Image 1 (cartoon, one colour):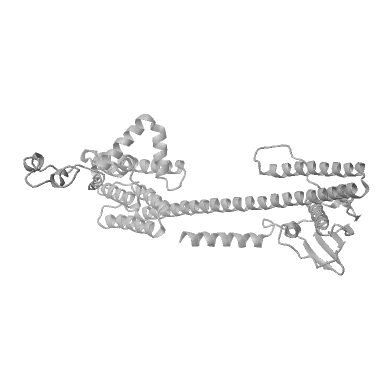
Image 2 (cartoon, rainbow, N blue to C red):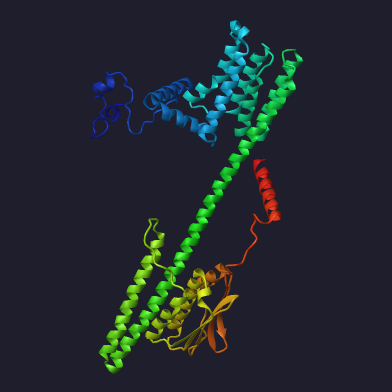
Length: 476
């Protein structure tokens, strides 16, 4: 559209009698496409061009990578089954159809046996080249049609019923039970109908039983696939839970290492400051600072080791601390200025590594809390090992002022989780005029023999019945 025909040039509207040649003589021109003009949406290609495009794309894929294209297409149509199962079922259909046609040599002149085989296998190239999903109705109609052509030319003995047996089994393996039951009834009805019309064999009962057995085999394959899918989901859930447990465990380890190291380091720094402020004892301050530096380096090594647990690559690991390392732990706190009275009673060699680690961490966290909340208190650490359990008790005097409150951090919760994981219990709170943390962990007896599910027949039967009931409910 020529905008100057109505308003002249950009200066303003056109004067009377001064119409431009473009407005008076030129024919009307169609409007040019501009940013504001709207185009009608392009019509989608029809079904035939789309089908031809898919066919051409599949031909190109076959030319470039025939084996890979075949494998990918079979996996796409497999309904989650392995490729070997799908290929085996297709080969079974092929063998049944060729054998049924071979028994009808005297009918070859009519071409009906060949037509039955072609109709039976015509669906496979159509689904392959045109990217059509395999549907039970396609398999069912092709099998029923091919079987009808075979039964119109009866022979005895006959194996054409195996076509229906395999096809009904394939449908039962990929479709819901109500759908597969419909095609089972249709196959049986076809066999009985042709038998009633005089085209069937006298052994029709055996053929019907074979079709039913094929349907049941397909159901078993579907149940197995559903069980495998459920097991994969359970494995994923267990993997997530294991990762969460590992993260919580690493978080507890990092917390314990940092809390202990900072508490003792602060005690050494406080001692160094007091030495410089009061006595001007440089040597004592240097010793305290040296101990603080040593503990800081040890803490960094422990943190690197703990964070290294997140790395999936194999690396050299250092042993976890145990009951024998509690004495060195107490010596660090005593050297930092926290008075601790430590006693160990019983056979320390009977304590397992996991229990020893828990005892070490409980002692470490408790003493760190004392150094943090009651630095001037007297602490007592008692560990007692008996034939039945291991007990640890950390007790300290309370400082003057309001009663301490149990925080919401990871300290006491982490100790309680460690104890509970080993079947024990932990309590923390005021005990008279003191504050006390007490834990009791049962001792693992190497000669203890527990009855497992495999050794308990009743438990095994109960688990089997529960699993079967759950699978049957999921399949309905």
